[in-house]
Image (cartoon, rainbow, N blue to C red; front, side, top):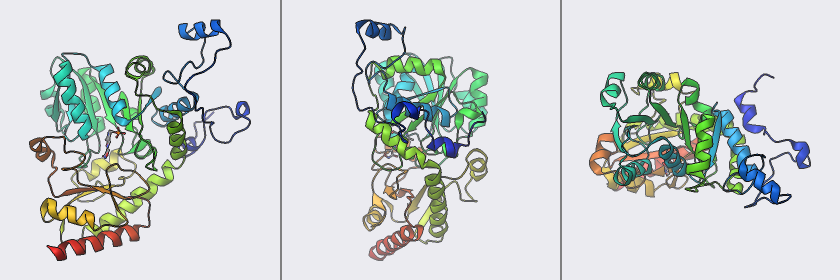
Length: 396
Ligand code: LCS
C-alpha cells in the first residue's frame, strides 16, 4: 500500500482499534507494570523468548505508539521516547561515546547540551569542540583520530544560523563519523535529516511536537540496532523514561502538527514584516528574511522558515528587559513552539550557563531576545509588540 502523506500519518495511529473497543484515539495505559498469565510467561518475557510488556520503564503501549509515530515521521527505523529533550540528548551521546573520544559540535547549541558536554568532558574524559560547521575544509581541519560524532542543531538556538545538512553529512560519511541532528526547531514537518543521510535525530518534544506547553519530553530516532541498545542501556539503566500520560498528550498534540506549523510559519512571516521597519530594532535574525545570509540554504533544506525570530533591541539588556516587561499577549517564558507566543532573553536565561566569551562568539549579546511566534491572531501579537516598543523607547 502506498504510504500516506505526512499530514495523514500525523493523525492516524498504528494500533488495532478492533482490539480496543473501537476507540478512535489510542488508549492511555496508565500503568507501571503488566501482569503475567503465570510465572513461566514472566520468565519467557524476561528471557526475550516472548514479546509483550513487562514494566513501563522497559516499554508501555501508549509510549510505543508515540515511538512508532515518531520513527515514521522522521523516516527512521526506530524511535525511543524520553522524559525530556536533555534525557534524549544525553542518552544518545553516552551511547555513541566512550572515554577518550572526541565530538564536534555546531557552535550555539542549546545551553544545557553545552552543559552536558562540559560535564562529560570533566567526568568521563569525552572531549568536544564547538565550531562553525560552514565548510568541509573547516570541519576536516577539526577532525581528530578520536572524533566519533558530528552533533548539530539547525537552525541553531537562538542565533538561527543554519548548518548545511547535505554538506556536513557528506564530510561525515567520508570520514566515517556519525551525524546527530537536534531537529527541535523544525519538527519533522519542516525538515527530516535522516532522509538526507543523518544517522540520528533528537527532539525536545516539549516544543513543537507537543505544541501545547504542557509536557516535558524527548525523542531520539535512528537505526533499529542502536535504538534497541539505547532502550536497554541508557534509557533503561539511567532511567529517563516518558510517562504514559505524557506520551498520550504528545500523540494528541502531533495530530495538529502540520496545521500548527503552517500557522506558526505564517505568523512569523507577518511579524518579521512589521518588525523590520521598527527604528529601535536591529539585526533581526529570521531564516525567512530574503536578505538573511543563509536564506537560500533555508529554502533548500526546510519546507518553511519556522516560527522563531531573534532580534536585538537598542539599549542593551536594560531596554530588552523593559520591552519584555511591557508585553501582555506575548508571555515572558523560555521554551518555544507553544500556542502562546513566548519571549526570552538568551544571555540571562537559556544560554546563561554558557560562559560570556563563548556566548559572544556565538552572537548572543545582551541586546538579543528570542521570540517564539504563537498561534494567536498575528495582528494582536504585533499590536502588543508595537505598544511595548513604544513604551520602552519613550522611557529611555
Ligand atoms: N534541544 C534544543 C534545541 C532545545 O531548545 C532544548 C530546550 C533541548 C534540546 C532540551 O529539551 P528539554 O529537556 O527542555 O525538553 N530548549 C529550551 C529553550 O529554548 N527554552 O527553554 C528550553
